[in-house]
Image (tube, rainbow, N blue to C red):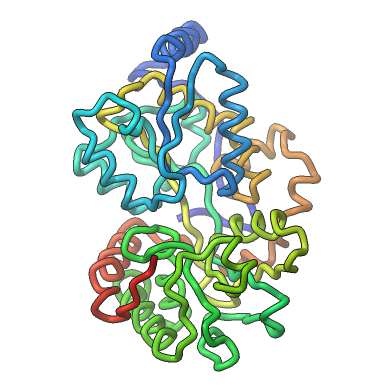
Length: 368
């Protein structure tokens, strides 16, 4: 999917598409004016400690103080975001999201269901074709890999790979960072476990992942709680399966209390791209477009890197000499990512269907 070497993606340069034609600086000025006239932007499922979102949102507010940002349910999963769009098709109030940030597999289905509208940001050409919809309905923005976030006070011997999680020493210790019936992060966690077992990519790995979690649950190792930095610190979920950027941010937030290990497993290293899209029913479509421009600007992309995410435009930024050395120094070594695989849309779609539809029947753990 990507030409992946360490932290580097294969990218190119930039053009500006606001409609179907190249836009001038004047059209950008018009977009800003129209967005300010709308005066609001409604987001959903953007925790401030996820991928540096708090600072990214604050930067948008500072840049456009005339636009009030209304944040809905920060802890919602990708599936929840889609359902909220469906439930608010005719709602022009603050409960209708303008924009969504969802796992890659949710982009094409939202497009097929007529729930999102096209928009190509000014940096469109610097985004890999494989990470965006050709018509601009959804666009990849950042990615990370599944990792283990470990409370070192409780877990003395940290797991090095997925199979280790089945060991007796990890009783009542292992949790997902979401509900695998709705959360892309959790779905990818189950998928990665299946891929680690040697199953083929796609549906087979999804099914194998369910079998792995069935064993994990039967062994008494799985904790059916949506894990966060707080539950990890409290000892409720001392081993958390989460995106590396969330684990690293959690480590920083806890600041040694307790000490935290962040481990990229040896096998089943699954990289997950998250995509941005604008609701087809957005009450504030111009503010939504301006938000997208912010996210894909140099400033927005560096915001992801500051939050330990790999921005989709990494190479473009590197070519321009815009990446501070201190940002790179805080990231895990490139070697940890050498085994990373990027599931195709087809593979993700088949795995997601297998996992979301069969979790209850196979694993039977009600995660909440």
